[in-house]
Length: 87
Image (cartoon, rainbow, N blue to C red; front, side, top):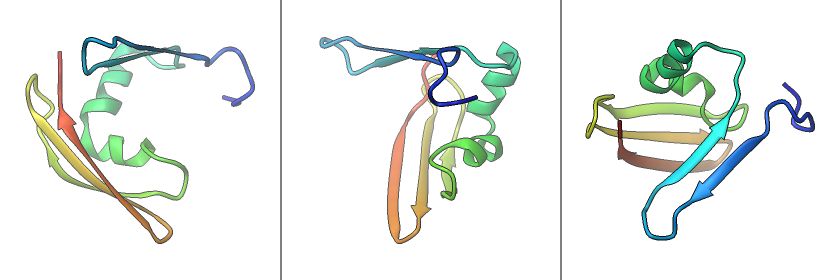
């Protein structure tokens, strides 16, 4: 995958009336592999964030309505994200 290639372009849609962002993108993976990469906390921690980011999963319930929370470190920068899983 190259950042300048057209094959992996992403489409981003934000509905101004809802707190939801829809991302559409093609991957060289099956739907089952993509779902696992987004719901398995160990796999998620390996790919999320820029290269060199260390991720620690603090909460992970990959069910509809379940919560997630993780902390990441990139050099001296620390950041935290949290949210919930949707269908």
